[in-house]
Every structure is written in C-alpha cells, then in structure tokens.
Image (tube, rainbow, N blue to C red; front, side, top):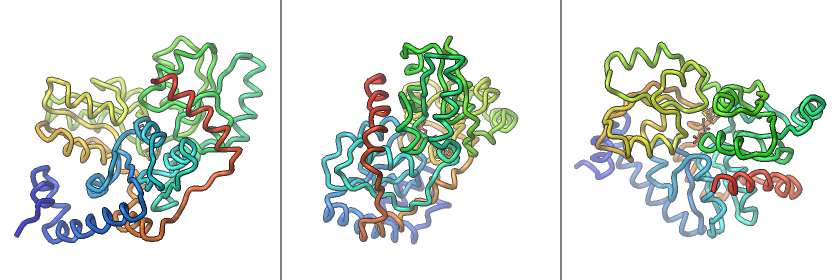
Length: 328
Ligand code: 13P
Ligand code: SF4
C-alpha cells in the first residue's frame, strides 16, 4: 500500500529518491519528531535549501531574511535550526533567551569562513584614510564576530535597497565579491568588495544554463544574486530564494530554470506544483549536512547548542536589527 507521503513525492517527480519503503520509514520519523518538538516546546525553522523531508517537519521554511524575522518572534523554549551555522547564530543573536540547536555543528558556509573580524576592522581602518565615511556592510553569511564589527547586515533579498538607503558614499562589502558586484551595478555608491566566494554559486557558468535553455526555450531563468555577473547577465530575474518562490507563483510563465542551490528546486516543486522547474543548480555540501536523523537526535538530546558571548550578541544584534528596520 502506498503512503500519503509517497503519493505526494511521486506527484512532484521525486519518487526515484523516495521509495515506498523509505516513505513509510520517514512518516514514522516525522511522528517521533513532532512528538519531540511538543515535549521540548521547540519550533523547527528551515532554510529553503534543506531536504524535502526536513520541509515536511518544519514549522517555518524561508530565506535568510524571513528566517531572521521569524526568529525574533519565537516564543517557544527552543529553536531547532535546519540550515547553516551563521543562520543559527543569527537566530541566537535575535532571540538570545531561547535555546538554539543546530543539528550538525559542521554545517558551515564557505562565505562565512572567508572573513574574520580582525581583518575586517584592519581593512576598514586602512580604507577610511581614502573614504572617511566608509560603512561596513556585511552579508548575513558571516560569523557573529564579523556582524559585531559591522554597521549594517544585508541579505540577498535586501542588499541593494539597504546600501542605497545608507547616508555613506562608500561601502566595504563583506564577504562576497559576486554580491558586491551585483550591488555595485545597482548603486552609485563606491562598493569595495571582500574577496570571499560561495563555492556553490561561483561554479555556475552561462554555458551550462544556456544548454538547459536550448531544450526549454520558453523557460524563464531565475538566478540568485550570489551568481557571477555573466550568469546574472543572462537571467530574466535576479532573486533571493524566497523571491524565486514568489516570482514563480506570480509570473504568467509556466516554466523556469532554477540557478541556485538544488534544494530550492525541490521547494519550488512543493510550493508551486502546477508549474515546471528545470535544474541548473549545484548542491551545497554544508546545507546537505543536516539530515532528518541528526534533527531527531538533536531533539532527543537538545544539543548541539549555539552559544555566543554576551558582548558579541549585543554588538552583532545592532547590525542585524538595523537591517530589519531598514528592510521593514
Ligand atoms: P537566501 O537569503 O536567498 O535564502 O540565500 C542564502 C544563501 O546562503 C544563499 O547561498
Ligand atoms: Fe554558504 Fe554558498 Fe552554501 Fe549558501 S550555498 S550556505 S552561501 S556555501
């Protein structure tokens, strides 16, 4: 007998990844996870790049900005964060009295690793000799320590708007050169990039996307602003992960090529089942470190917990709250 979950995944074209047997086991795991969440008064937040089975047990799924906004309002005792380390840190900074659990502490991010707080402060001091009103703007894909030395944080969904709203004429943009280049194209301010890379988006090339487009000429290309400038140049829309879901729902188009981490294609299939999505994507090994088994284990143990020094929480919250105010 087929399960409701298998029927659902089959309708989404995911049956080769989720056999009937696997779906039966997953449904039993979902029941235990839901019971554990209730027992520990925990809420499960998940990023759009997580696995389909994580979406099924999440209380809220979103992009970095939506997850930060949701974290502020959490009243449950604990947040189980299915995403990467800097996102769980952001939740802790915004709601420090809650216990924040990241099911696998190794789930990092190549961008967050690219900038360290001391180097950022030193570079800003050097640049202020030439640009006295320089602002330090950090993508949320940074460590809490970097956020603590930052004037304002941004996400992919609000970077251009926030940079344009600042009174400063020059910006040190941490930690990603591709996102800095995208912001530079959309502002008259001087943007000085940091040389970090998202290894997932930086590998994507126009030729790979155009190969997919040859087979689906009517499909709209949706690309994440973390992609290279030449990739953004051939995109019909440049959007955050949540922006892609909204665009796919609202656009009259019925076919889309998804240029970002592959988890978003699964999320689009689940959120907009009436339309077609073609992958021109890469997997993020960090996002995929979070498994359902780890999630269940973390709820059983209520660990591993994200902890941060009080002074870092206080300083970092300033730059994130400023972002939330400016993008309200
Ligand atoms: P979003 O804010 O668009 O979800 O992006 C987060 C991220 O890590 C992209 O690689
Ligand atoms: Fe970091 Fe890139 Fe993975 Fe996003 S996709 S978490 S930016 S390594």
